[in-house]
Length: 89
Image 1 (cartoon, rainbow, N blue to C red):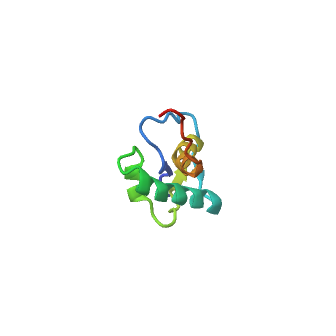
Image 2 (cartoon, rainbow, N blue to C red):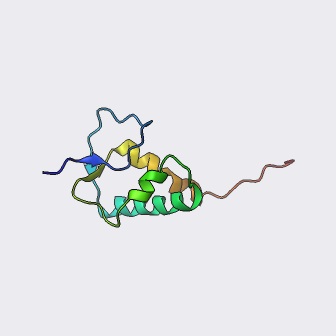
């Protein structure tokens, strides 16, 4: 049996005590969308290594911690928000 692992984990994320969960189609689609935006916008982000290694589809051993998932996919939400112009600058 393959070792289950969080493929979205970054070293500074504390996921101690969290179980890993399998990806479903919706979660995987959000990961792919976030990875696409990460690749375009943040070439040197802490997630650039993860983006480079993501496969087209998850393998049976690829899972995620909830904390890692929400941090990784947060870029997709941030990029959809319009920029606000500050007056006098």
